[in-house]
Length: 364
Ligand code: AN7
Figure (cartoon, rainbow, N blue to C red):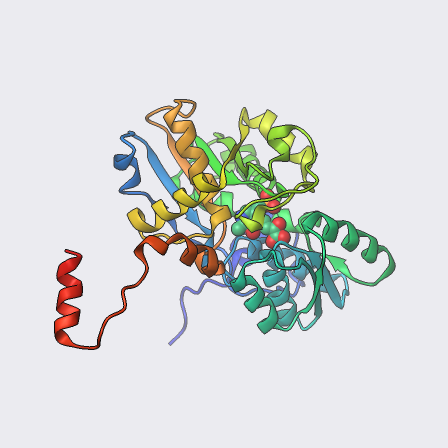
């Protein structure tokens, strides 16, 4: 029997809107096409009449939105004859680069801050077999080194300063508009290097620009809201931060690479940046897990944490339709998750019927 409908990744899906030709060998792991899940319980819990959707990017092949950019960046690197890629990373980019390098049959070098990347991300990157270089420094130090190394060695940088990364990532906005029939009123995102917020805006803008050719699409674009962790909030402070610190290690970034691009997004969309405390971020993460059954990593929850603050203040009004991007899977960072649940630690009992009955009755 012939296969009639098979999803083969975002490049095939949005081919006409991406820089590929018929001859391009596409490096894909079936990324994109992630669920847009409407929150059913949280709006009632906070007493707000709003329509909130989460774009659950944790269901990409390596568990984060980075795969959208990586399929494009690695496809183009290979097309240009590159035999090796390199990145600095807080964890997710390294896992993604490592996987797509394997898929392409090229080498991946990743610089990560020693002791500051979540366990799941390290496990992935090790398994994919990338050359991991741990540095005694933070992401920003790693990024500076990667830029220098790439001047001297035949390696392609696949951080989001690679424009093909943003090309791939813009497809998340296409998917949202295709599904909702129009852009939402507000789009909330966690911000680290600010590549993703820039990419979404590019996607929304491209669709809006030729909405005439797209029956289901309007020229509407959302207000873009970028949220950072208080200890790593250069966009909120209006200046680079030298020693960023946050439990949300994915966004432990003080010198964002897409600084000017993101300020442009803020201005064009009429949006804003704000910062959340680590406790607020972890609370939002737990709220999603315990009230919606959606497990994202801490950095991802900054989008909901920020939205909750802006709904409470009325900055985002009742009646709005909002999309929050949940950038990474909760399984990426088991240590932080378990650490957050100490109050409900598993009970330990005898392996007997009586003991199990008692344990169940005790918690009814
Ligand atoms: C889960 O992996 O920078 O604002 O090196 O992993 O586009 O940087 C990760 C960033 C949000 C921020 N959520 O996105 C890396 C890295 C998660 C992330 C961000 C990251 P950008």
